[in-house]
Image (tube, rainbow, N blue to C red; front, side, top):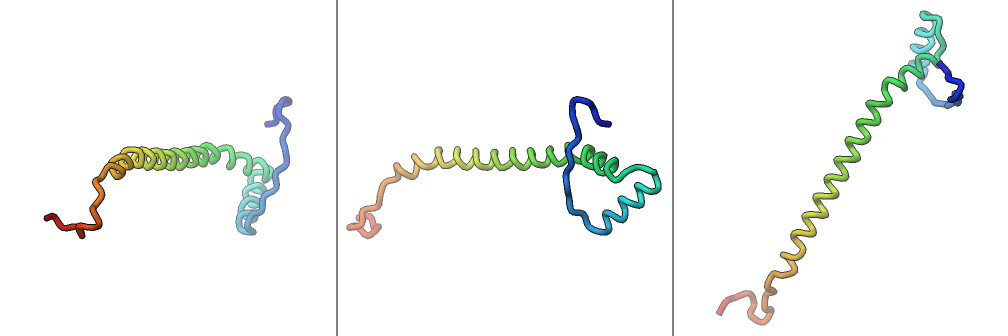
Length: 93
């Protein structure tokens, strides 16, 4: 249903012949338009797609965060390691 405050906009999408055939058959059987089913499918699936996107984004953020924390913790340790004396050849005398 279209509300007076929110006019509908046209969106174009390419679909396979099989999907169009199935959509047309459903539309014909129920005497409803393609648009009814396309809007319904998008409305129902969009929250799932958004959740998947945010899940992936948060996982990437966590990975980046832990990587940065690891670098911050280990860099000072690596910088403070005693350097080997090249004249001694790595042997203790």
